[in-house]
Structure formats: structure tokens, C-alpha cells
Amino acid sequence: MNTIVTGLQWGDEGKGKIVDYLTETADVVVRGQGGNNAGHTVIAKGTKYILSLLPSGILWDGKVNVIGNGVVVDPIGLVAEIGRLEAQGVSITADKLLISDRCHVVLPLHKELDAAREAALGDRKIGTTKRGIGPAYCDKINRNGLRIADVLDEAYFREMVGYRTVEANKVLAEYGLPTFDAKAQADEVLTAFTRLRPHVTNTIPVLHKAWKEGKTILFEGAQGTLLDIDFGTFPFVTSSNTTSGGSCTGTGMPPTAIQAVVGVCKAYTTRVGSGPFPTVDEGLSQYLHDLGREFGAVTGRPRGCGWLDAVLLRHGCMVNGATGLAVTNVDGLDQYETLKICTGYDIDGVIHELPPADRHAWDRAVPVYEELPGWQQDTSGCTAFADLPVNAKAYLQRLSDLCETPVQFVGVGPDRAQTLVA
Image (cartoon, rainbow, N blue to C red; front, side):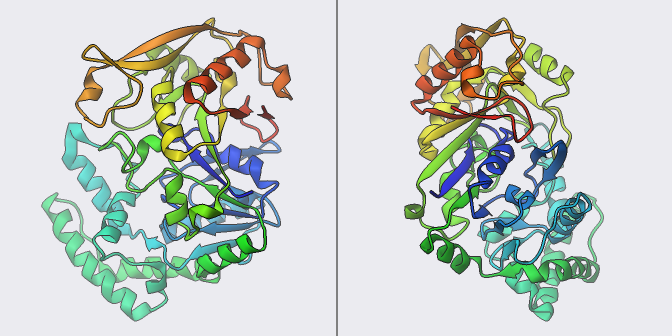
């Protein structure tokens, strides 16, 4: 069965853990969108791994990992990530990691443009990671980006980097920022590419061959539904389609190849960066931060935390076609006496069960809550779904009812073994 794992919130839901768990029965793990602005944390056998561009299946032996055409690749960042994983004892060979030759390249100038544009927005900044992802996708849509296939032709690559550098330097000069030397920039990327060259191929026939042979393919989403360029809280979104459809366009696999979509969410809600967050709660945020939780894997930024928002999850299940839920971080709520779930938004006296498209309506959205009793028991030691406290199971059932989607997996801790099958 081929499965897409996608985030239902603003990212950071624990997708890497779920993908890692499902990889045991998969043959191929593939990423289809985003860049190294993603941060997946996986803890296996007591060791913590931070992944950005590499699919989470890279931690398993005997699995093929694919970076699909919809991903924007920072060659310098990817080489550094490979080096970190290899230092932790993870083998990354040419047959274990494949990179699509259709991936667009994130250049050093994209990062500077990203930072410059964020600074220019002032109070209206998006809250990007400044990894150059947005500008790289802009070049892709503007049809003047460079793909990995272009790097294979060194003369052409240098010529095009020169052209893009001239354009970028004009923008950077307007902001009073240092400009780039085209040759040095091309040299840096080409040097990194020498490490990546053995992994580059046309990944589309590889995936189709695996599909036709009946192998199991696991599609790993990055970020989350509410950061989707179409379905998220625009304009405070990322630059790709983070929903399940992006896994098809970003890999060259058709919708007919997919049998299941697992939507991942936390037992509460978090987000980083700018933008609306109706259920944010300062007390819950402080409580989780005091536990050492909810700091970004890529940036280290503390995440805003709030109560579970069924309005957003209902929307996420709908646009992703979720066939099951994976609810993580249930143990984060272990000590709370009373829990809240947002079931609707009161906007100007009208109750909304789905999020608005009007960006200004978010400013007037007042969450409508229902309260449920907490379980006030440690769930981190539970080894089966049946072991969960009665109130924890009731909380999960209420979430399932509100989203009209069954709970399939439950996370009660960061380790691979702390994943329960419902």
C-alpha cells in the first residue's frame, strides 16, 4: 500500500517520526516538496537525528530514499547534512539516496534575497527560515531557475549563475547589502555537487518501476497544510503545495498510485513565524517550553503553542483526503486537569466550521471551545493503545469525530518505540 504522510497543522507535527515508523514496511521513501527549511527530528534507539532535505527513511538500511523533482535543493546545505548523518554512523550510498535531476537549485544568492525581502516587510514579515526557499521557487515559477540537470553542464551553469547574480546584486544593492561574486558562488555550488553527482538521476522511472513491481512507496510531506501556498493561512505560508497533492506533482507519481493518506497532528497546536493563530495560549506555551518542548529543529525558535483547533484539522483532513490520523505529543498534555478543543470560530457573530480565506477575518476570529477532562497520568510508558487512560482515549475519539477521520496512530514520546497503533 502506497501512503502519503502529510502535516495537518503549521508543520512540526512529528511527521518524521511517523515516516520513520512506517518505513519499516516500506521499500521506497520519497520527498516531493519544500527544501531545507523543513526540520524532521527522529529519535531511534536513543540517538537523535535532525533531517532537513534527506527523507526520514535514510535512517533505515535496505531502503531507497528519493528527493523528488518538487523539492528545491541547496547543494551546500545537503552536503553538510549528509556529513552530519555520516558522522552519526548513517551510511548514505548512491543506491540508498537518489536525487531528481529536475530539482531546482537553491543558490547562495537566494538566501540573501530571502533575508532582504523579510527585512523589507518589517511588521508584515512572513517569518521564513531565510534558507532561500521562497526566492528559489520564485525563480522556478518565473522560468529562470536552475535545475540540477543544468549543473551537469558546467559552462552553461556558470553562465546562468552570472546572469542571476547580476539581477540579484541589483536588488541587494537597493537594500544596502553586500553583493555576490558570480564565479565564487558557482565554484561553491559546483564543489558541493561533486559529492552529490553519484546520487543524481531521473527518479520518475525509478518510482514507476517500483510501483509496477508492487513495492511499497511512502511519500513524506514537509511543513504542513496551513503553510500550503493555496490552502494555508495566506500570505503567511511557504512557497510549495504542502498538501497530499504536492506529493504527486513533486514526484511524478499519479494519484492512482496512492492508497492512503495519513494526516499528522499534535494533540495541541503549534506554529512558528508570523500569521494568525486563534487558539494560542500563553500558559500552555510556557508549560511546554518549561518541559523543554516546542523549539524548532531547524531554527531553534520557540514555537507558539495553543489548544487543539478542530476547525483547522477539519480543513486539513478535507483538502488532503486523509484516511487516518496520527496524533503525536499526547504525553505533552499528561498533567493538565482540563483540556480545550476549538470546534468553531465566531467571526462577527457567525460560527464558522472551516477557516476563512479573507486574511482580515482572522483578526476577528474568536475560538469557540468545548472542555474535556484531562487524564493527569503519565502516558509515555504506554506500549499499546489499550493502555492509554480512559480520558485520553475519549479526547482522541472527540478529535476523530470532529474531523470525521479515524485515529490510526498515537505518539506518546519522541522515540520510534513510543508509537501506538489505534
